[in-house]
Image 1 (cartoon, one colour):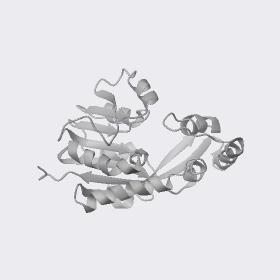
Image 2 (cartoon, rainbow, N blue to C red):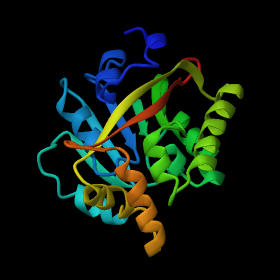
Image 3 (cartoon, one colour):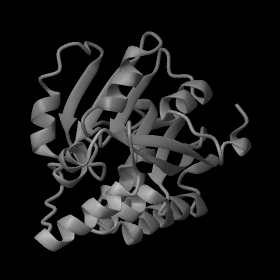
Image 4 (spheres, rainbow, N blue to C red):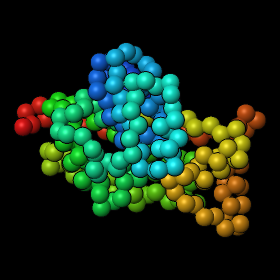
Length: 238
């Protein structure tokens, strides 16, 4: 896959990381797994993968631990800034759109923790939504992430500039989000359990109207631009 040609590509994120990362036979950590959708894709593809997935949202974690059909996966409640494993534990670490959810003052520590628990030569795959696009125009009305997304990128750049982690690749691509109705958007975005979005009646209607601009016969479709940084722990790290 030519990573430099992905800027205008629309695809599932799993298509990308499955092609560019060798995950079979690896010990894998996902930080901030949410509803475990990506966890499931990682755990059920390939073979001989051991997956640990962490989440800080206790409500979502209580649902994740009820999952019974992922025998190679362990769910834990833990923050990225305090990973409950020893040094050099994992071959690959994933953060799917989760670094910007770490408190800004803890982002540097989270990346230091990533370095600590990665094996020498191990890879951290960090994807972050870019602050642009139609979906962002809806989201920012009640949850403006411009500052935290910028802080997440700044933390990544700082880690690379300090040579804590090496930048192996950086590229952008687009993924598509589809909602069958505004009610589905409300259930999955506005009413997420990890955030307490309190919308006034007026703001609710504004969000609904903005959402409707993307509504088609088969649902509302949004292109979500994503930046991926693949960071590597120096193989010579003691």
